[in-house]
Length: 352
Ligand code: NAD
Ligand code: DAU
Image 1 (cartoon, protein in one colour):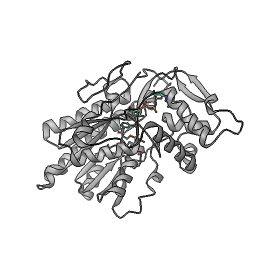
Image 2 (cartoon, protein in one colour):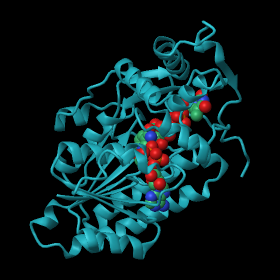
Image 3 (cartoon, helix red, strand yellow):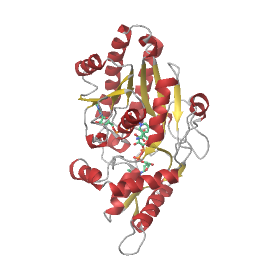
Image 4 (tube, protein in one colour):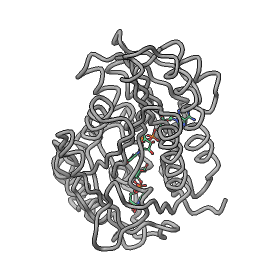
């Protein structure tokens, strides 16, 4: 099949592109605006593949989106392009409304125009797969899990914009019959993770000898999934799931933020001990909490396990060890980001 991947130069998008080119026969065309969060070097290992193509374009630009879809003539559109960082959505929500809401609308319209002209059986097989987040469900207390039936209750500008995009995608199915699928996934981590997010930020700050900023008391809980396990789930859903269906994807790996940071420190202590003989945990510093900080996310992923046979291959411990080792071996990749795009300053406290 021919697959257009929006946001393919980002963290999860590049994992999806590498997975599709390495593990399937699909042709893959990346459509990406190349914002601060993108790194084309994440695609270096596959960019020479004859089944790979790339266009720099903004999903809000209707004529550019139309041109890419006409050129590629896709069987599947996998939509990952988004503004993705909660702290940046607190500082400046406008870009989140533009890309996540307006951009998704523009893409849906272009996908609908393309799909409506496809001959059978390509028309029946076409999929618009929307990649979303567990944050649309709001925050949990100490108990319970998000299921596919949990009511939406987003609380940050980021999660509200993603919730709105999910509603648009489902509306295009119910109203126009566009064959969509949706996944709502928990926190991803792994290689090529942009160092504004918790795990890579802690790794690069630890190595620089800087304080490790833990928001509040580090008691908030996230459910962690290794990014390649997410990429496989996305492929399974767009290849096998019924149009109109939704699947939650999660790691069954709930950890408090302190547990995560201590895990990063322990891995670094093993792999790159500090010269002064002390542990990296000495660098942990509690800082002002994130405004509106959701307490806990946790996903019930039994539907995708039962229906599609998906399961994760990495535990949090094996995935974290691989991730820390990858960052130690790929300083060129993240060093270039720190030099050009983001140098690790605190985000999310400005009043827009
Ligand atoms: P990311 O920030 O690493 O990458 C986003 C990519 O989208 C970048 O390459 C960027 O250049 C591109 N992009 C942004 N605005 C664009 C626009 N207007 N037009 C075209 N391209 C644009 O994001 P990520 O962490 O890889 O997340 C990918 C998707 O998965 C997002 O939709 C996000 O909401 C969702 N998601 C992320 C996680 C997570 O833990 N990171 C979990 C669940 C869902
Ligand atoms: O749950 C899925 C979501 O996970 C995705 O939809 C988002 O795109 C992705 O960014 C992620 O959102 P979070 O806000 O959970 O991820 P982040 O890495 O920013 O923060 C994880 C937790 O760590 C959160 O409770 C805030 C905390 N934190 C974060 C940073 C950057 C800190 O304590 N210190 C930090 O410096």
